[in-house]
Image (cartoon, rainbow, N blue to C red):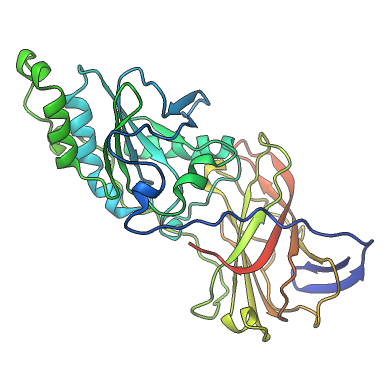
Length: 364
């Protein structure tokens, strides 16, 4: 195995013992306008059983017998379409608080992480931290659910259905499934189901946005770094090496490459390590270098050349960025980073993380 080590601009290439980097499992997803039926969401049919988790880690079964009628609304706090409907969903949940129905938001994946400097969680613990952040930002009453560590829901639904609306009866059958959530359609359905309850219960007029006083949901400012990368670089598939579900993976890697590299030609490779905001960490203010190593199962046809690297010391939560002149290769490459960060308590800690880059364009 060949290893290229970069210490903020210093490059060294040396040989390691033989070994192969395992390729992460790649799940093929297909999504189009007929996706609802293809994933088993058909009116009157049982919902495929998937175990989801709430913010404290308790399992909630999607599918099978339900304790009440259940409403599942997929979305995330990076999707402006979803955020534009939250007030209406919260209104409906308040208006039906006394009925035999429960409501859930469902985090399946981040739609536009670049708008909020958020990152896809690596573990169930990180998913729970993320929906804790969602709940604090929205300050609504509808709780959030997340997929389990095996990613069963993501495998069934794929990358599509970012704003699914799913209503399930107590027998676990689909009453309503919409690819794009529709608060008016949801209210009409619930009105028809709970007609007797609505007629016999004295309820306040439907809630209004002014009464709800939900949190301001303007996008947060995204941290930027000093490196200006070339435009229109496709994002690469990156698989984190997760060794322990309870471990804190402070750094998240985004890798981009110029399209000629994907076609067998040389080009530029851009690496961006972000501090995940769910941990509320910052870089330790010191001259200690951030070390990055690149490991491949065999020598690259040409050595990676560092064109730009982070300045020392890194400050606050700015990203640690590298721009490299990369040869073309179709073999997976492991990236290993060693850095020091400061916890919210002020305690400094060293973190070492590994990622495997597949030289394939990310489907998202």
